[in-house]
Length: 144
Image (cartoon, rainbow, N blue to C red; front, side, top):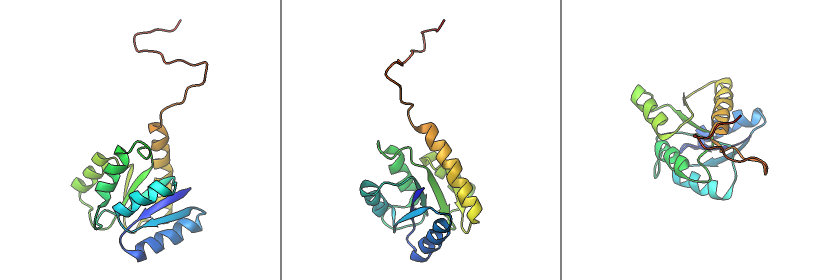
């Protein structure tokens, strides 16, 4: 899996990169939400792990922007924070579309489980492709 790690603290990015790469994931980094959006435009990723408290565009704003974007809306998105840990912060993360909410520092196993769960949720958000012989069935049509 290719993961975009977004955090304004280089040390946090480096630590998460080391943990994820040890589990054979590729990591791309961004220092804030605006930089992350630029990375997404030029570098395909399979998931996003983002801090909340960052300059320019915070994690809530980044998640909202990703969910509104036609091309990126289904990307698995995990909020990973040490600062915003109240129930209202968790509710806001869910409201803007985060798949999971983890507090720092999380064990590697918890991060990997969150990535798997987020990937499953993202797959459910993807529209199902129809084969050439399949047609859409409207809600008022019945099958024999």
